[in-house]
Image (cartoon, rainbow, N blue to C red; front, side, top):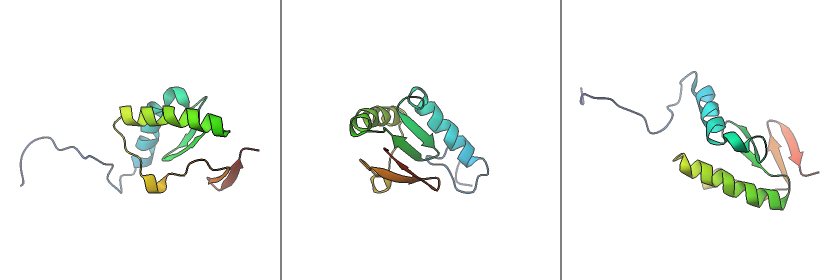
Length: 95
């Protein structure tokens, strides 16, 4: 036995059956006031804004919330200023 005490993970371990629901609830909590006006969230996918101006303004709000919650984003997985994205099997565009 390595030691006694309370151990807490820094990341969500793989394999937990309720991990997706827990993560979704976390994202909804972190971005609560923004989900109706500034972004669309499903798990770790966040769509921000319909126009360039909205995207620029809203992404700042999302970044501030993520930083305040002590969460980290993976730059390699981020896509910014796209006119068209594939989201849950659908193509979404500004049109």
